[in-house]
Amino acid sequence: MTNFIVFLTDDQGYGDLSCMGCEDFRTPHLDRMASDGARFTSWYSNSPVCSPSRASLLTGRYPGNAGVRSILAGHRTASGLPSSTPTLATALGELGYNSYMSGKWHLGLQPDSRPSAHGFNHWYGFMAGCIDYYSHIFYWGANQGGPGQNPTHDLWEDDREIWDNGQYFTEMITRKAIEYLRRANAAGQPFFLYVPYNAPHYPMHAPQEYMDRFAHLDWDRQVMAAMLAAVDDSVGAILDEVERLGMAEDTCSFFTSDNGPSRETRNWLDGTLDPYYGSSSGKLKGHKFSLYEGGIRLPGIMHWPGRIPAGQVLDAPCASMDIFPTFLQIAGGDSSQYEIDGIDILPYVADGAVPQERTLFWEMGKQTAVRRGDWKLVLDGQLVEGAPAEDAVHLANLETDMGEQHNAKDEQPELTVQLQTDAQNWRADIEARWEREYAPKKQGTVTHG
Image (cartoon, rainbow, N blue to C red; front, top):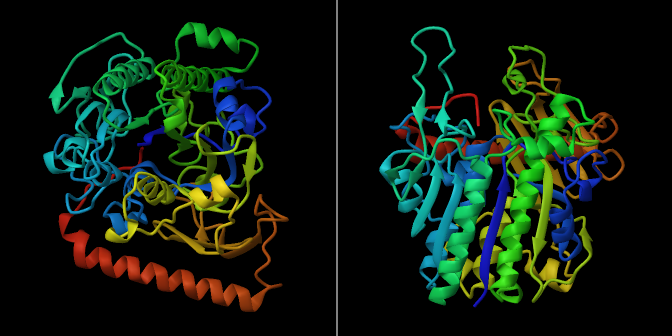
C-alpha cells in the first residue's frame, strides 16, 4: 500500500522557493523534490488565510462546506472544525492507515475539534495560530487595548500539555516526524504523515546558523530566507529518512503553503508600523487576506518516485482540496462515499490526462472570486486587509496577465456577467448552508493565522 506525506508551510509566497524563480533564497531540497516529481504553476489554496485553507486541504471541501470560513481564535475553548466533517486522516483510517500530525493545527482547541477527534492516531504540536519558536507561547492579543488576552503556552502531545523550552520549533516538528517514520516502518502499517510547519509565520525567529547563510541580505529577507532554509533542510531530512527506510517508491508526498505572504507589521519585531516586505508573491498581485492571485496562488509540488514521472511542470489549475480525493483514490478508497469538492488529480500528474475544465471559487469576508479556464474574476477585491475594495469587479486573463494588472471587464462584458452571476450564486449557497448548519456554533475569530 502507498504511504502519504503532506508538507505545509505557513504564509509562504508563490515566489519564495528557488525552483519557483526566487534568486536570493536557496531551497535545494524542495528544488530536488520538484525536479524528481511534478511542480504546479497554478496551484491554489482554497483560502487566503490559514484555518479555512487547512480545513479544505484535510477535508477536500471548500471552507464553507467544511465548516471553517475564517481564522479561528487561539484560546483554549475555541471551537473549530466540526466533528461531523470527515478528514483525510479519518477516511484513510477506515482503510487501515495510521495517521500522525507534527506541527500546527489551528482548527480548534475544544476536544471535538482537535487532531485526535479527526482521525489522527497520535499528534504533536500546537493548536493556536502562531507561537514563539523557542518558548512555544501564544502571545496574540497580549499587546492589544483593553483586557486583551493573556499569553498561553501551546505545546501538546496527544492532548497532553508538554514543555520543551529553548528548542527551535521547526526542528522539533521534523524530529518528531522522523521518529514517527521509524515507528511506522517497524510496524509495517501504511501511514499518513501530516507535517504542517508554522514557518515562515511570525514571529520571525531562526537559528544563527541559518541567518549566517544569508548574511548578505537585508534583515527582512534574511530572516525569511533563514526560516525557509530550515524548512527546506527539514523536508530534505524527512524524505532522506523515507529513502533510508526503503519506503521511497511507496510514498507519495505533497508540498504546498496555506496562503500567500504576510504584510502584517508585527513581522518586523521592532515596533515598525510599515507593511512587511520580507516575503514575495513573485509577479502576483496581492498577499495574505486577498483573493487576488498573490493571496491564494502558491507553490505546489507532488513527489512519488514509484508512480509520478520526474521533471514535470504542470499548468492546469489545481487546489489543495484536490489532495483528499487524490490520496484516497490512491489508497483504494471511494471518493463518492464522501462529500468532496476537489478532484482526483493523479491521472493528470501520473498519466498526462489534463483535467476537464472546471470552475474554482473563493470567498473571504466581502471578497468573492472565481476562475474558469484562463479567466479570473474578483468581486470587491482587497489588496490590504481592512482597506476599501480596489475594484468592485475585476476581470483578468491569467494566461497573458498573471499579475492581474489590467481590468478587462469592459472588454468582456458577457463573460464578466456570467462569471459574476456564477460567483454570486455559489456564494449564496455557501452563506445559506453556513446559516443552516454552522453559524449557531458562533465560532470566535481573530485576525491572525
